[in-house]
Length: 118
Image 1 (cartoon, one colour):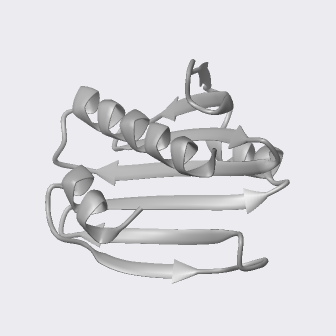
Image 2 (cartoon, rainbow, N blue to C red; image 1 turned 30 degrees about the horizontal axis):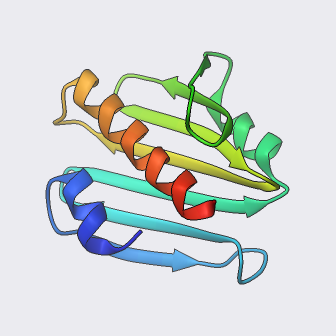
């Protein structure tokens, strides 16, 4: 995902940080705008590890990669899924978005990430 696409999700032009914690195929991208933050993690073989960030409240999500779940909280929405052996996590934090809008944006972003990984 590029900064322009992330800016559409966040509602403002973001700053971008990219790290490659394990190898060049895996990455964590953090897009930050004044009142919102989008984090995307992709890690080979790490679906269960990423799923731990979800906590116990999980709801299955259909048609987003494999085994996708969403994990809502007050000002944050997390979607975790996998495509083949690559786990992904989308975390969207925004205090100014209504809860429904936050959820829709996170799910849409997760769809895009899953599509890129296919």
